Image (cartoon, rainbow, N blue to C red; front, top):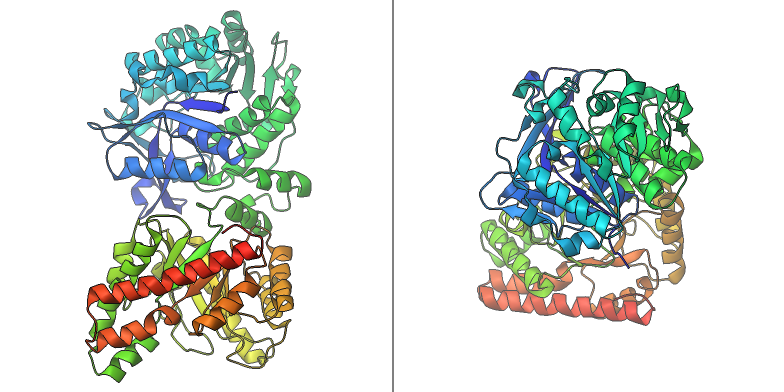
Length: 637
């Protein structure tokens, strides 16, 4: 049995997309960083739709090459065919959205890593494990990469795999125009036509725009171009026609483009056409490789293309399978899809990077409590920062590089610990609230968006709000407005958001209190990726809270239980109640772990090594306790 549905071969790059819309690329002041390159986009697009995809390419032995590899893994793409080139840099592309028709871009591909792909990079056993091999036209433009592609196609056909070509014609990548002409999609060339036509018989599926079939067919008459391609290939030909959709020809071309097989289209606002073809191809491959008819396959393709033209970026714009089904079931409510809040929430929550089925978080984001403790012992508050590095050392020791562990750490006192945690594999949350404030105030100040723009995307925005359903109108309005702005700022900066609520510090609570709070925040449009809730004592209270989250956001990451400096015996009891509910993924506990150790360390009674060992022991015990509670409840530890 073959374990790979599709291998794509060819370009991989880092796309730097201008964040400003409606101006020249010269005037772009900041850029968003995404993975790019047609085969790379397709590998991710098909993976999001549920296919087991893989990529054959080269990346540089540097930060951008590692970025591509890490992103591919996070998207679920098999990277065994991604070779690290020790001598060449990863390709870069600068892109912008000027208006509905102009999308300037510059390819930085001089002797880049992916253009060094060669025959030796094609592993016969790897190719033999695939049901389909898909290539793009750029890698047919150079003798070395062409040889690699032809070897892969030969192996695919020998092993009974399907083969597909996305013509993906970029004249300047064939050397027909200069670096500043990256936006140009067509220049006639007999040489390019000849080189393409020499390979067309190797494919079962050929896909392109009308202009791309013009270059493949050697004429700007679209019907004649298709006829010319048909003369050298028995492949199904799929011609993309922009807003008019696409047509498939399985046999004779006919007298009119409308004679081909078509699928339903989706009239949406065109915001950004870059990467739309790769989204289209991803949907088409999903249908083709799951044995759907061409009408359904084109429906998938047209929908994925519609998502792509409606959003910023290429791969980030492509839908998940869940999102695509929701779109088909509900239909278009707002032609500007990126402004459809319901759709965008599903897009965000079903395409998040990483999976956290269990969460054991050491929370040492405390500021006020540790500063007070330093004052109590009579040492400088400057000692708090170094202590937080010891907390990180304890968390790192317990995690041992395994998934399912995390930290909460602040940037004001714990900056060095936050820096040291980067790229460690730990889940990292950062608080933004002014400690103890009610109504809620933010320590980062009122300019939320620009402050969060400085954060690494692996960091999670955490905010604590002392909120109760019985708060007066003014208190509710003030706190809700702050949380709404914070949630919007986090999403705009591609940061996950954790909302912590503690009603018991405000007024009496019953089994419905927390659930009412959860309902209210969803009602006003706040969809946290994570909830952090105090340890409720009854199963009913947990059930009501979990039900409220599941009804409103079935894709929520889940809940972590906070500790409130409870004794270990109380935490054990609270864990056993919470662990019965699948929505609860673990805990985020701090003072129970560090308070006694911090007092002794500040006082000079223990050294660094002892402090780390003591905190690691307490943290490890809590992790074991949670895992045991989950196992007892019948869940996965």
